[in-house]
Length: 246
Image 1 (cartoon, one colour):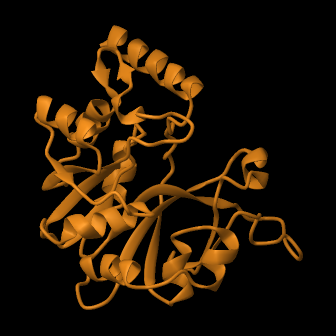
Image 2 (cartoon, helix red, strand yellow):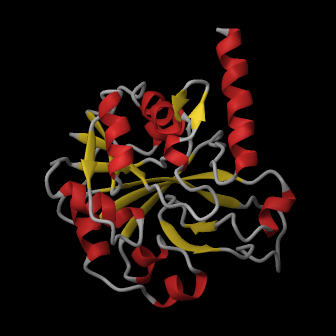
Image 3 (cartoon, helix red, strand yellow):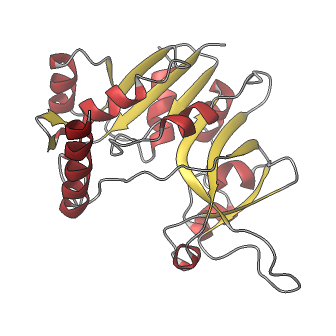
């Protein structure tokens, strides 16, 4: 099975413009993301997918494989689907371009042993919530699944509701998602469903239409998404400490 990792990277961030090119210990952030992902041996190929020439130039400077895509995509899955037209694979893994400390084990876990090609199929990493404050945080997407971890629902509100029992754990979505080609094509050729429009969660598209989304629980999947200058400074400090300890 051929597995391709794709790192979507946009220049136009409202809170931190140009963040894929922000300097971290002498290298642009996209370099750190790529080199962390490159350590995952289960990935046959890795590409940065961008719509900006500045990011393309930096990728070429550091010999990072890059694919230029349209600048009209509304979601990362659209960008992946465009790449899938020219880069053939059995499974495509979406890896966030603003997580220079992305977790290797979570990436490996998101890759199934086999990816069916005759149906729409995807995977999504989840992890248990241990901080009660995260349960109430709408930015943490809570998930519900069956006994085989097949996705049933996703919500910004705490689900399930502890009406008759409190002895259970909440789980949240982690932004490492995998798709086969059929799943990507379905996403691009469909419209948001009822609950996607209500919750504002892109991945709900698959559940609204009854597609096969397999949740994969991992024990540790915490990473830091760089959305602000404060996040950037924190990541710089963490990477500097790691370099000093090598």
